[in-house]
Image (cartoon, rainbow, N blue to C red; front, side, top):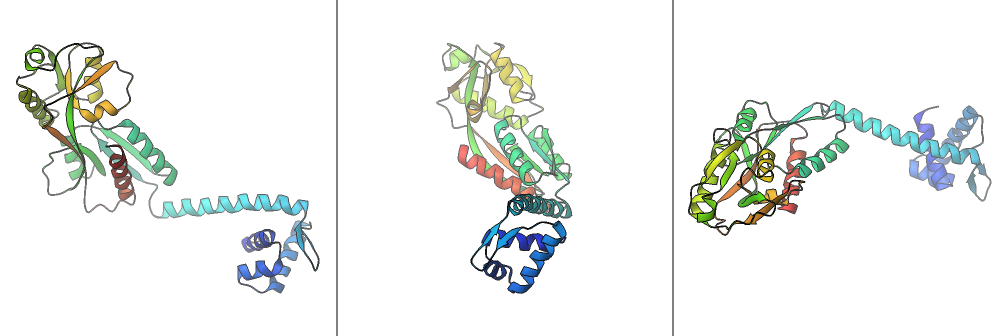
Length: 293
């Protein structure tokens, strides 16, 4: 049995007419009829009842058509997988991101990538913007989601969105949003050496309100900052987009009237990169931010 026998059988089974099936297959009817007879002989069964008026599948023919469909689907899947392997889409992709990146976005995109490129291995690296910059320049990351500014001539930078700040407090916090109240509060922020530009933006945000924040705890991830806030160890200025993300932490987020200070979220990658999945990631990430922010 050859693959063409299955294609011929499927065409006749779907058309239930040898002439139409022959036209569909771009062959004449006599060789099609011979191929079906050869298939029936090899299988030792009758696939079609046929006379001058009509063609009808036998019970055995209906069963064989169902199995034939599954075989064809499996064959197409195997062809797709082989093509992906041939184009090296079975390799690795290394994605960096800052800790405030929406985890739901990462999950949604990874599911789509897994569905389209099942043999691709995606490695995630949650780290600071500066560390991502160096890793991208050294070829240790394929794509990064960072916080601007990033000063580089070696990377292509795309803006995703601009984010203002809000105040994160423990649930039920009753303080006022004025300088006199806030200057007496303990603040939690990123480590100044870990995220220098972000630290400066927090200071600028507080200065706009009219005070200098008393930072008593410094962390390296947004989740750690929010956990400390939820546990009553202080309050924190955080990007407003963080308030949109799902969390089980007991927190309140307060909008700031002084919202001129903004932080820009960007993507960066080597503009010379030939990774076959890079632009798929870029497209999916841009689409997510365009819809949700």
